[in-house]
Length: 385
Image (cartoon, rainbow, N blue to C red; front, side):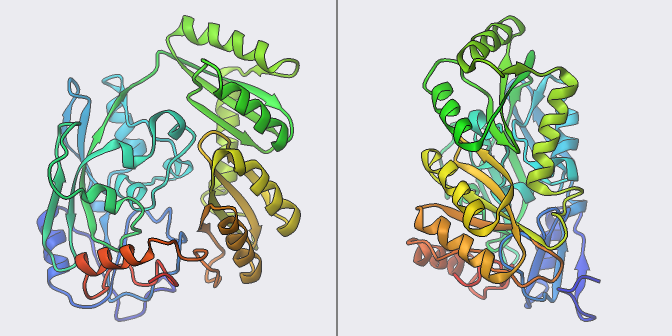
């Protein structure tokens, strides 16, 4: 039994939309929405619930339209399984968060606003979701969007649900925009410091090379290229010429190992950070990210740094004590950035968020409109609401 549950907590695993709606309609207490559990430690620690709604039985593809490049799935389906199905048609959901290898679900990735290196080219789930079905706290079923990518009718629940951490409703079904699998891909690696990588990244992004992903990881800049085989090969030659001595193409095995290392730095081995540490997700202007992450390293002992030098998203591993994590949140806030706790030791009492954003009043109003009783995910956004 989880530390968040007691003997009065019950768990329900709805297998379809009707069961999910009935589960919420039939209870009046606190509810925690849970999927694969790969982000259970993200954000604020939720209050002990009366009911845990386990979405892992809400799985499977409901409709795939290869010609329209869309797919509708139940939100409990792991993204890696979905991409395995889509690969047979030469398609994919172009999203690669570190948690995908751990079984992260489509709904969970939306609820946590998680993304990976490919966000540089394809965006986050916010950009890939074109339709959504949500069950609100009272059991009401609400739908937004559909299967048409340009559909703008209705209340955009998908945008609201992105990053809601299960506080606005149960994401039950989603319609996703697809992209073709690339004919070829390769990665160029340039060893160097974070500051040197930031300079190289700025030069790359000012030119026509169009990297699919660009991340500093440990002690080197990784630049991923995708496209037709001949075009990728030619762009790699130009990239190596631009970067100069030290830049090398990675073999397929080396490329896989490099990006696996990046995922481990972000999510920890088997989804856990090293003992006694916490992981903070940091967002800032790309031009400020390297300096901010360097400051966290110098002043707070941050380590295991990853930096999306063109997306402005990075992660750092910190000592798991409240003062250090709080100071890190404050530093990010002063730099005009955002930060979220994304891993912590079991039962560690660490602040999930930094100072409240200017729009916190609007966040509270939306929460009150969709969940007047504050039943869903209470504690996730403490101290904001």
